[in-house]
Image (cartoon, rainbow, N blue to C red; front, side):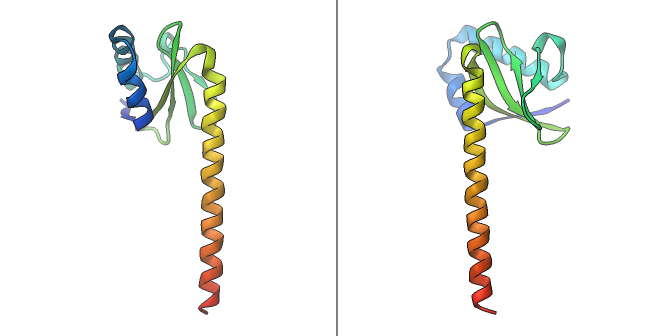
Length: 115
């Protein structure tokens, strides 16, 4: 059984949806916890550790699975906007990696000064 965690953006979007959709999302999350690749979820791998699962014909959950025990819910998207949202998430990830490289290289340079 997967341990399901919600990102802040997921939780914020979840709270803004109608009660009927929230109930469907809860049901989907319960299914994911038991079997994240259940055929009823129509789960698809979109990146090395990022997946999408259907809630209904209008909404999908974007989530990541960093290990075999945990899943982190990243976003809830309209089926029409899935690819747009995924591209945005990957751009953010690339920006973070670039900033981490800059920080790492600047800390290496400063440590070289003190040697």
